[in-house]
Image (cartoon, rainbow, N blue to C red):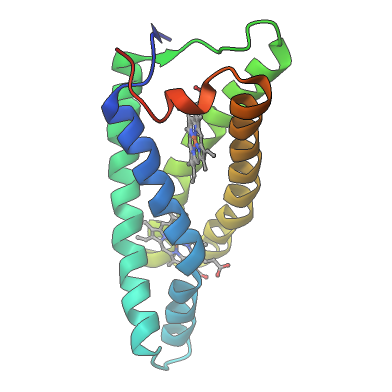
Length: 164
Ligand code: HEM
Ligand code: HEM
């Protein structure tokens, strides 16, 4: 993988945009479950659940499209080398967790589409994304804050201001 001097403006914008959209999905995803249950039982979901269910569909597809763009940029421009050169286990953990994020960001919308058009067991599989994302985001955000404010190695800063 290519080593860059930092993240580009596009990479930073996509990181935070996708993060906000994923949080929206995690906070309001249950409306989609309510709509799916109502359809299954021949009932109607409330207007707000229907609106949030529809938003879930389109925001989920937007995440999928943006992640594909992000991966192309990542392959083209690479990523900066880890700052904590001495601590091998931290570099490996960061590498693995970033990889897991990309797997989840692709697999979750794909399972969501299957849940929507095929039904079970994809709904149950898709719903597992919620705890998986929550654990990963918590570890990831804590690690970023630890790097920035404890190790003071500028890790958070490089995801806030572009290189160059
Ligand atoms: C990264 C993107 C996505 C995330 C993080 C996400 C997250 C969630 C969450 C948290 C739930 C509620 C689970 C629960 O009730 O415990 C849910 C349900 C659902 N989502 Fe998504 N979703 C995403 C993308 C999509 C897409 C693209 C579609 C379809 C086009 C979709 C279709 C569904 C369906 C059909 C359900 C109801 C599942 C069921 O219980 O049968 N999702 N999603
Ligand atoms: C849904 C939420 C989030 C997702 C899906 C996500 C995903 C990712 C991914 C995949 C990378 C690797 C980028 C690459 O090298 O290609 C990354 C890097 C990064 N993220 Fe997040 N992130 C999220 C939230 C956050 C939050 C809340 C923070 C800060 C508190 C944060 C701070 C960072 C930092 C500082 C980096 C750069 C790490 C480095 O340079 O080694 N992220 N994020």
